[in-house]
Image 1: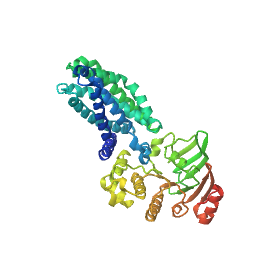
Image 2: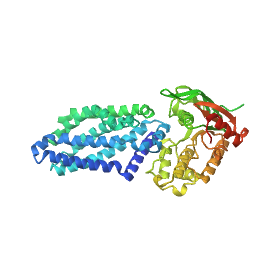
Image 3: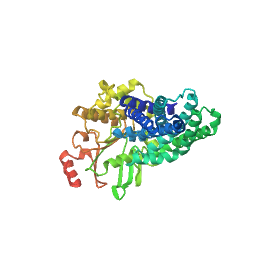
Image 4: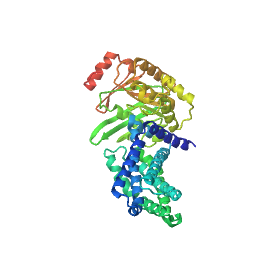
Length: 225
Length: 239
């Protein structure tokens, strides 16, 4: 109960600050819009070509906006040395990790939902019938990305070259998740049943469990540097 | 029989690369006692406080708080110390009340809104409870930082320039609060550059220079002039 309250207060704090400053959300939404324009110009109106590259483009957008958002996870903690306050708070530090992860997840899902809706409008794609399957794939993929991204953001928060180091660390680890999400998204958008991509979904779920477990088990050491 | 020390430091050394910042410090602070650390910039005052607060690990030697080793039992130590450092540890986009709520819940404390408001009233910030911290002055942020520590009810207070940015009224309040804290058995280790009112609360004066203790005396045995002379002598600097 106490653990859950501690995790919740971190989510509440991050979302309250984001709700007031809107720094990350505005930047991510603008960036997503920019990406869509670029993709639209690059691909043109060729629907066949579009269908083959759409899953990759979609996840490229998710990953790039995710990198921007996740990289800022601990930026606010540098303000007034709040990072030290997190370290000095007695108790299990994994509550802080789970709170940060949940906050990131909510923000990323919000941006991804917006991006999906814009994709549908910009590229004239009917994603309605694929929506439930797509929600599952996007959800599983985003948990994996957010779980390891939150951890690496903490690892690089006190490093001088963090903006460079963060994607360099994160992207190689994300390869299995990316592979699974793009393949599963492609199948879902083509109208295939979820059973046809069950192996990819299992891989994503396993990656999520492993990444969250690694985060929970190691965050204490990472925070204490 | 004298009480066991609330803070005990034995032959403490801390080096950053080849730079030795603390060079064999040994010091004790007993419950109900306040020790003021004086020294020029770079003398090692903040380093000593950060080691005791468990933010940094010593290179050699031991530091304990209430009998718990700062390097090996940091969680036990964190439950017992309150740190007021240069950074105020408050979020600018939260209100004063929200900041206190965040830190108290994160520390596992069970406090109600009335307790939070009482803590704000104690530092005379109650009228600003619902103001965002961004709009508060530096002195008010410092008071809020003190309220955060007050709320945690620590056994040991580690204060790094606690009166920095405070107006005379704030300094008076701080002195009174620390006297009450001491009277209740709390131990205080306070780094300061202040030779005036800030030292009133101290029972002992310790001067650090080059990472070593160069003078340790009961405060009452030193007149302000004598303290200033000794400080200048040991640090080649004036107050």
